[in-house]
Length: 101
View (cartoon, rainbow, N blue to C red):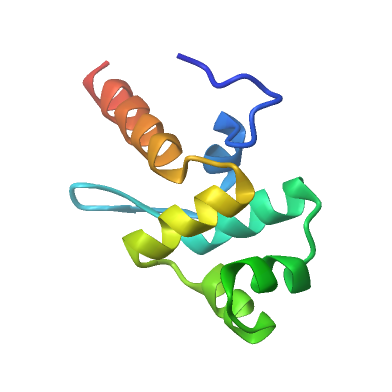
């Protein structure tokens, strides 16, 4: 199932992200996904930090981080209008299908 191009969580966003192949699967750089969605949204880091109730410096830390707290990712998804969990899940399912073929 493809995600429509106008959707904020485009399939290609995850495909182009940094991925490292590891035993048992892929590692997804969540901060990079957030950064790409933030850029796509047109929202500045200052506005994003205001909505997230954190400093701009913390926004840079989030974007640079490979991992993020689930609650924080939910909040960021609400702010950006993006379901990161669905995007990651679809990518993992696609990777699993490709392995089986």
